[in-house]
Amino acid sequence: MLTKVGKLRLNEVGQYFKGRYSSLTGATYDHKKIKIITSYNICIMQSAECFLSGYFPTTQQEIWNPYVHWQPIPVHTIPPQYDNIIHFSKKCPINDQLTRKFYETSTEVKNICREYKSFFNYIERNSGLNLHPCEEVHTFRNLQTIYQIFAEDNTTFNITLPSWVKSIYPEPVTSIVGRTFLLQVNDPQIKKIFSGPFFRLLLSEMKAKVNKSTSVPRLHLFSARAETLITFMRTLNVYDNVVPPFGSSLGFELRQKNDDNYYITLMYTNSTEKEPYLIEIPECGTYCTLQNFETILSSIIPKNWNNICEGSSDESLKEMEALRSSQSEGRKSNPYIFARGMGILSPSKTSIIALSAEKEKK
Image (cartoon, rainbow, N blue to C red; front, top):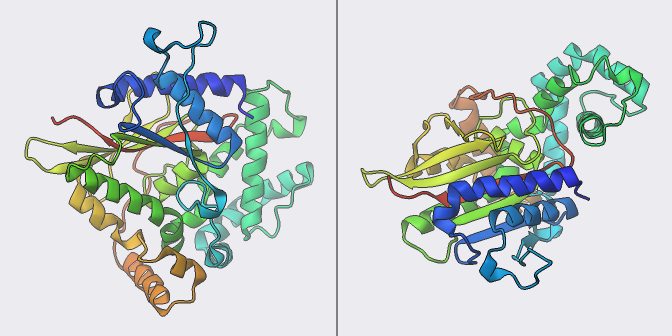
C-alpha cells in the first residue's frame, strides 16, 4: 500500500506536471487530451490516482459533494499476462535464457563480483540472504531487495537499522545497487525484449501527432516502477548508475521548431523544486529530430516480439543475430550522459513516465 508520504509526494508531482503541461491538457479533465496507464499493481495504481488528484484538483464547478473535493478520473491498466510495456510481466521464455547467459558470461558482472567479494560475503553473513554464486541474477535481485528495505525503513518509517548495516548504508550499498540495477538490459538482445514494445508505441504516437491525428492524447502518462525508468535509460545509454527516487519521471516531448522539423527532447525530473533536466540523447543531441530518433531505435524495435520470445522462428533468430552484430560493430557512446545525485529509492518504488507530450510550437 502507498504510505502517506508517498501519497503526498505523488500529489505534488501531479501539481508540478500541471504547471508544465496544463496549456496542452487544460485545467479540467478531458479524456481526449490526457491518458494515464499503469501496470497491474496496487501501489502503482494508487500512485497514478494521487498524481491525478494533484494534476486535476476539483474546481468549484466540479464539486459534487461539499465534503469530498475529489473527482473520478479513469486510470487504465494492463493485465499482467499482456504487459510487455510497463511491468514486463508478459511471458517471454527466451528472456530467462538470455538473462542467465548474460550473468554467467558478462565481463562486467565478473569484475563486480571480484571487486565487491567481501561486500557480498558481509551482507550474506549478516542478512541470511543468498548472494552466491555471485554470477547469477538472483544475487543482484536479492541485493536490490535488501537495499530497498534499508531505504524504506530508514527514510519512511524512521526505524533504527541493525548495527551491522551502519558500515554499508547508505554507502557503499547505494552506489553498488545503482551500478548493478538491471545490468542485463545492457545486453542488446534483452534491450529489444524489454524496451522494444514501449518505443514502438512511442514512435507510433509521435508520428500520429505529426500527421495531425486527434485520436492520440496530447499527454500520455505511464505509472511504473523505478525499474521501468532504468530499463529505458539503459536502452538509450543515459543511465548514470543512480536509482531514480520515488516520484521521478522520464519525459519524451515532441516539439516543432521554426524550421518546421519535429524534434524529440528527453526530460528527466527527480524533484518538484527544480526544472527538468534536458538530457542529451547519444548520437542525436538534446534536440533530436524525430527521423534520427527513429533510426537510433530501429535496432531495438522487434518485427515480431512474440516470435523473438518463443525463439522458434528462423526470422526471429536472424533478427537476434543481426541485432548482436550491429550493436557490436558500432555505436560506442558514453552510457553516462548525466549525473544528478538522484537520491535513494523511496517507499513505493513507483515513478511516472511521461510519454508523447507535445509542446507548443516555438
